[in-house]
Image (cartoon, rainbow, N blue to C red; front, side, top):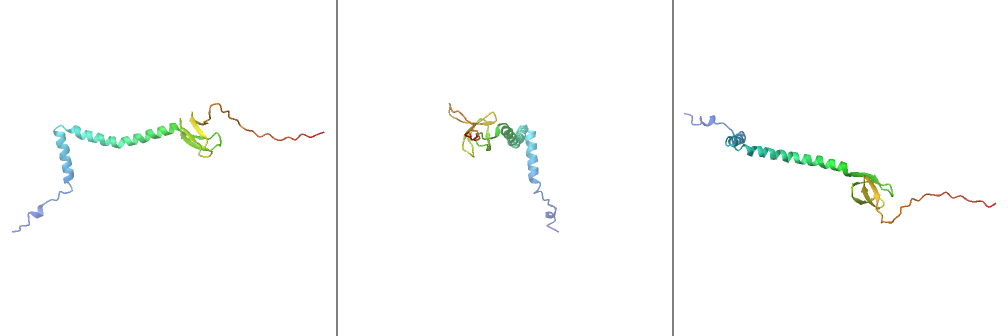
Length: 127
């Protein structure tokens, strides 16, 4: 008689054991009324995926509303800043305040800004 005959009829279920165990666990939890555990794990996994996406979209919306790109009123150098903040111009180092989507010079109270203009020289002739 062949003693190895029974060994040749064995099946290999090693690839299916994980899936069978998972299915049995879900079925067991559902049958004894612990389906809420499975649902809460699924909801938690969904929140882990959705929350960073919503945060990224919200941050882009906030930046679009608050980022100001304007020119320095002193040297006309274009730079960017957040609305309602103070900064120094990268070109001329002038302190600036960002208000109402424009850059304004920060000056001491009582300072008068003067814009210089070039006056052409005219020579008077003696007669």
